[in-house]
Image: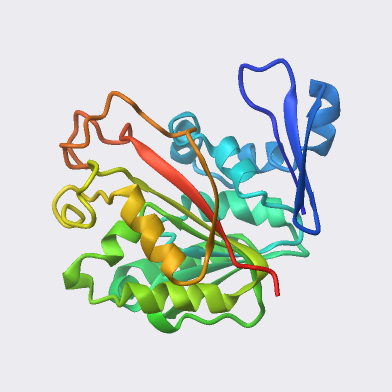
Length: 257
């Protein structure tokens, strides 16, 4: 895999290359990095709604793509993509040799299948898969599974998800060495999953514990969407903080066989 991201405000770009699990970070001049950067075209893709583009700064879209090491030819599953913010970014990055599965859980299919169908119509390399999170399967092994601000929902009892089985299904779907990347809203230390249904947050340490229990290896985190001023006491839908919550991004790796 090869990933490159030009970080706004810096004089150069960071190119992250991977070969056999080894990571090399190279600082390149802007002109060189633009030529190698597979993300610039995705961010400026004319198919993206203006509302998505307006959210790039808050969502740190380029940083997210770089953190995932997303590359042309990758096969990705976007778990519960809803309207498709990230699917629209993944599709042009992985390109015609790659594929993006917009996976819609059974619990939300009645209203979200339509979103995924629109995505698959607009992007030839996107297809919808609807099913149970605990038994999700795809027609080829995956390089990356992404879950954006959804994991906490799956721990809410009313969703009826067996989270341990869900994580096991992700593990099974990935290639050896594949990545499981999770973005979510930070809860207060010690909160665990207790405020998932009320504040729509989850404690990062508890999420990490659950994912590692499925056999994944913790592979790093990004502070790109951290917001230190968020004291973790408000619902993520509170208008005073909506869109500006403290979020964490964890990357986990399936061990190589």
